[in-house]
Length: 162
Image 1 (cartoon, rainbow, N blue to C red):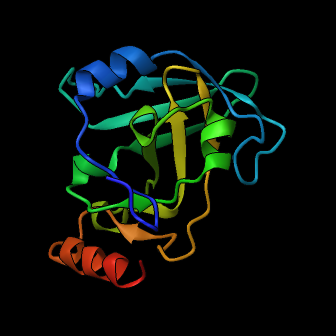
Image 2 (cartoon, helix red, strand yellow):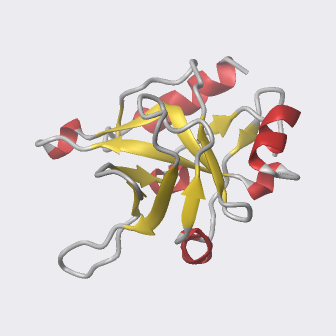
């Protein structure tokens, strides 16, 4: 669904998505703070117990650098990212359905302190292997991953700003 503010993220078939995305990705501008690193591999995070995980890893190919990621639908988050013709051109995308947002997870010692970065999502186009990081100022940089009851608050705040 496209609105003035962008596209509302819908649930994806995670298995199909991961099958498409376990590939090398190219970030023409790099990631924020890591502008010189352009080539990454996206892969599923595999827990030691061989269980299922909603997390992904974005691993730099040329450097010792990695970022844990999660899809907004995996945490039941009503999330939107802005779209425009420039974004479609940069991502070699024809529609919002070509683009997949992922959120960077900041891992901390205490489980309740783990956050996701809603302000700087990683947007990928699995079909073109292109990716970039957006800055969406209306969202927080540190959003608690496990904060109960806060997802509805965020959803209503994002609707108020559109």
